[in-house]
Image (cartoon, rainbow, N blue to C red; front, top):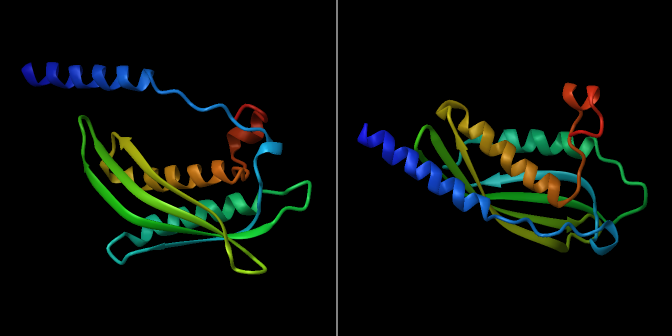
Length: 163
């Protein structure tokens, strides 16, 4: 009973801290330089699972294939480097976190034209699928940053404009 009250208190405390989270206003297309992403490569140290890297690679490839630009944009290739991945137990499930560096290199010159560093953290109920969810979180962050299209799913086909 005492342990359940502690967990409930931690969940409530976490909920309150998340309520204070605010997103920055989105910049318009004119304020932000967009790129024509031609490919993405995922790299990591040997101690990071190959399944995680392959899942990120697969999701990025699908997003790149489904993205078209209406105007000519600078062509780049993305290098997504997973610096570290940590996994652990959390209140009711598992927690996984990855430090990621994304570099966009110009296709013609090879010069790095953009770089982003972030940490992706996932909380999940099922410890078995936490790595898959982490891969999805990493890919979603890169897809959003470079304004790529998410691949079509049954939900997006049935309800366009809602997802």
